[in-house]
Image (cartoon, rainbow, N blue to C red):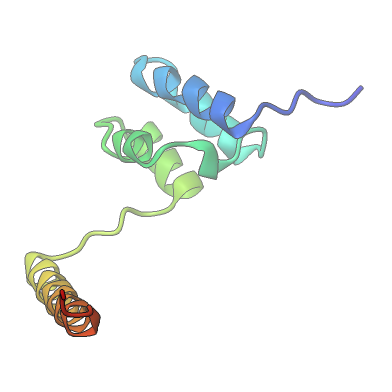
Length: 103
């Protein structure tokens, strides 16, 4: 008999409450580790919540199954923001220069 294959939307909606119950994060992460649930079906906010648990077994299993959290330093964030602002300003200038003048 084939295993039940939930839709991505169904799996995502099911995962959120599982991550919020105190005793269920280990069960949820175990399902991911045993490939019965895809890590990609877990919303990013729930992944962060699982990584933030102040419980060593949960934190360890979250890192093992979902990977380490990517931490961007403030300096890096400021650099990224400046680059994005420059690109947006250039695109705005380009768009303005390509628009036909009103008659």
